[in-house]
Length: 393
Image (cartoon, rainbow, N blue to C red; front, side, top):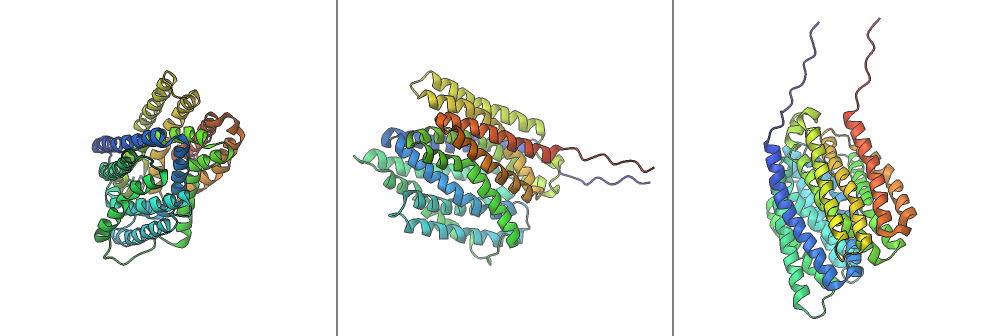
């Protein structure tokens, strides 16, 4: 009786680590500039304005990533023809959101900023998608950094050069580079017939998955702002900003395996080694822990420092989860991710509401508990052993 032939999968090589390291170089250049902008807002405009900015950014996270997710997921796993057609639709969606945001400038800060940034990011991702498809996170991170630097330079120049700067006008300067990007990307991606990113059911699943994830990651900021005040939500939003900046290295590491996973039909042997993933998560968490401990010996508020220390656990777990998620994308386990994110959302928000009396520290504890559950679910789905088959009698 012949043995079954094992499918051939691409063997991961060291270039994945090289690409990830280059991505980290560019990524943290951009994240560093973003953190510098955070300092500028707090120093020049105040922690309350940063709380407003944090809620507006949370609104962007609830709009842009969910609508973009069907395009982002299919860009790394579908044929070239489908990819090019869906990229056109992706660009047009971004333009529509930017226009909607511009129309609301005088009505609601949170609404206009969230919509405009959502549209600008979707357009930028439409251009970067061919690099993501080829497993080149370093190029994606490089363009992100260039955009970030341009945005912060425009906004910081306004804040420091005028006598009485406002968050509204500073934010307009911050998003101005997206207008230039929209024009440039239009010449690159238009020219193909638009295509929808899959059938309606798949689109709904992928939007729902990312909406659940966005609400999971940012909904607590909005809820905490409603239950407490702008200062407390500013503390917590700052810890989220720092941790998510570091977690992005896990996303880059997972992205570097997009091509090999696609060619290997999503098999674990073609993806990131588990040991490397765990080491990456441990290092990421340690970085945030060091930041929090150092803050204890500075004039920074104790509540902020303690929240940062607690969020170091979240950072380590979320880095590992980001790598696992990249594998699940290529395994087409879309419903699994949707169910996991949606089911844990009420758990996390319920914990935030329950622990809101502890301010930013309570929100950080709620986040760690919920993310531990998500990591456990992903690890079980990917690495559980199939049940042994009984031998025929």
